[in-house]
Image (cartoon, rainbow, N blue to C red; front, top):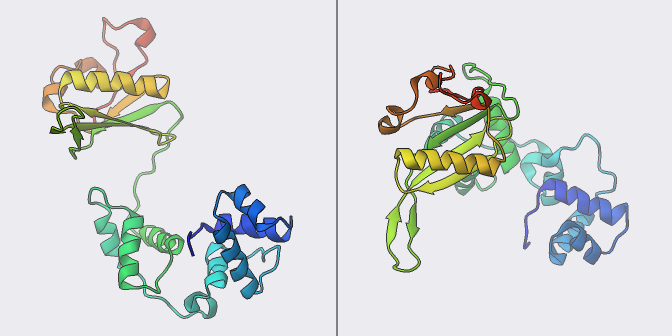
Amino acid sequence: MTERLLMRQVREILRLKYEQRLPHRAIARACGVGLGTVSEYCRRAQQAALSWPLPAEWDDAQLEAQLFQRVGDLVGVPRPLPDMAGVHRELKRPGVTLQRLHLEYLQQQPDGYRYSQFCRHYHEWTRRLAPTMRQVHRAGEKAFVDFSGKRPTIIDAATGEVRPVELFVGVLGASSYVYAEACPAQDLPSWITAHVRMMEFFGGAPAIVVPEYVPRNIFGVMCPPLLCGRPAATQRPDRADRRILAT
């Protein structure tokens, strides 16, 4: 098969096929997938004797099991669970994601859980851990900022010189909308200009800016009253509602 689709895409293909009775070429255009992919999924649905509408109690894992005839899902044969403690530990490393760990798990257990079930088992496992504080973010209230700690490199198109840079990242708390910028150094001019561009990119300024970590050379020149959450005496009235919270 040329493409492996999400089950919501498969449901839409089956709906257009059996409810709307569209030809495969029209379904491929409507779903933005290849004609061969549509034909393959329809062939699998026919082999599995699926009908439309699908049973209401079927989740994505059950539909996938019917289409791909995985024994563990169809007749209840247990599959090997990943080492959840190891997964949890690996996720704390920079650049490690659940998707990457799932691929590594499948290399060791080819008949193991698909990605959605892998994530479900992991999240169920994490709920048994010690409880943590839940934070509620209101839209536009907070932006979390930090230098990432990992230094990417840029290449000068004219000279071919490879230079390491610092990566500034800003994230809105409510929407997780991300802004990232490569800066020449972790200095005050870079820190300030990155904030200016971030707020231009967001289209506004949040009420509170929360630095995860502020380098000493920047921290020392920032206004102490602002760090304490109090407007400075010389601050403009129209900007008195802005706060910087050090964490």
